[in-house]
Length: 336
Image 1 (cartoon, rainbow, N blue to C red):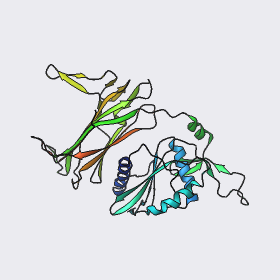
Image 2: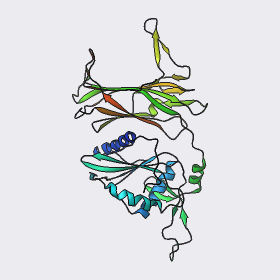
Image 3: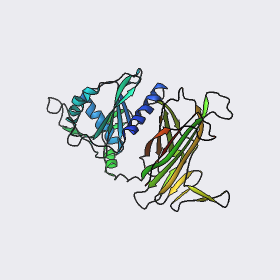
Image 4: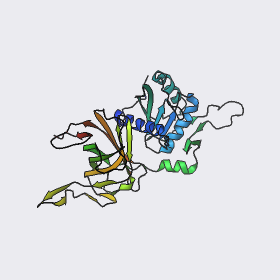
């Protein structure tokens, strides 16, 4: 019975892209778990999980957290039986006192196995769990606990942790993808034949939630590209700018009265279009057969701990005219 499931604002493709990124990092022996991600090889005992989940959700302070069942840190993808979820999740919920983090579940096929992704919403923190030994001899007088995650350990929340939970969460600006292109091509000059040119151009519409100025530094942006379950992560060389139009030959003019930019940041005083561009040389995919690619953009605003993120799927296109490339994907929103 899924009476506490919710309809998440995250699309299934966004959750899947996040899972695939984590799995790709694990395959390349890169750090996988961070403050928002937890991986388990199997369904653990619910009473034990409840305290870990509550601690993770409290420390996230409103940001969604991702649990992936079916991944072993040393063995990789081992798979999970999604049928156990129907009994496991209600048992975990029963260990909470009052509010339980709302959750969206998704089965993600990987390497002929299936992992189960659980995306938990934490915007109703604090989350309180029951002391499973309360009432037993020698268990002490503590009936309830507000757990807190610190690094990889779990402890009881301190006063300063609870104060952090009381601070109102800033309403973030909304992001909408208007269009995007991704091309992969052989570089004109490269000492390493395994490298390719990756060129990305994403057109966003950003709308602040209030009248305050928003500053997004370029070095606080990240683009993740997934092609045929292979991923490239871009952390450098990302530029942010409003759209421009041309007149009088090659003279360009900024087509925005609310958004400005420098080489280092975008400065946003109101709603408008924002272009995100990146070009880099990265490894050539082992294969390019997929009709879709996935772009995930994460941007951090100054003064806001929670990053903005948006995911979009791009469709493979064929060559047009004199264009020559290994592969190209596009997305364009139809605006009526």
